[in-house]
Image 1 (cartoon, rainbow, N blue to C red):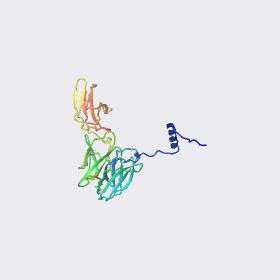
Image 2: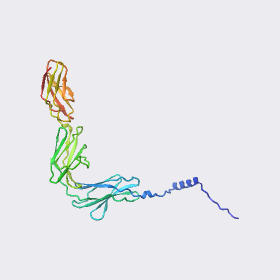
Image 3: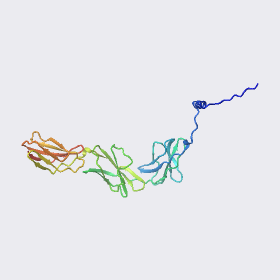
Image 4: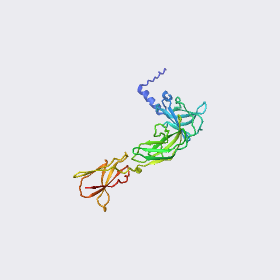
Length: 313
């Protein structure tokens, strides 16, 4: 007796069901070639030599898909060796194992999840030199419209960078001066809302920044801004009013003026007016002698009182 052959035909729906079953049993789809594609190379590797550190930084504009890490490589002769592996969210590295006067080359490559490395970044060549000492005796002076900072020079062929922060003791890598300073002084805008802190560093006049330790920190607090006392008073008396004016203070950070009046010794001087302009008008005629004093008000404190001005009104 002949047994008929049994044939199986799978519909498209059945085929999908079988595939789903295989996946549910732990089967994985094979990786795509995308997972092995090279990432873009890091770019613009730069370095700063500050004290006992060489601080490297670089850019990366490659796709974040399959991206895992950066490899930092250094050469002291012909061959490069890896000195650090950096997580994908960091584009800086600090090298502390170097000697002044020795030439080093650095480059950075990017690695993906499959261990495939990108092409090399640009190769950076740097020869760190012994750094100059910290500037001494950093001083400041409050000007009419600027803060004037000065310090003792650190020697010949030495330049300077000034650093500013609103958070005491915490400074970034970028100075506030656009180019290194040749003179031991700097003029900055005045901050009148909160204290500001400064340090100064010396550096060598080279392509790469060989920067020494920071100077002592100075604190510029608006509470110490004391204006000059007002002067140059003029009085104009009319039938029903008196207008008193004075020279506007040169300090651009003066916020207003306060006018004090004394009509008798017992009560003394009393605050009778505040004005943002250097003028005051007295409208109430009392037939008594008024003695006026005016102060200029800074961000926090006011000046010494002006000379006393006597007015009969």
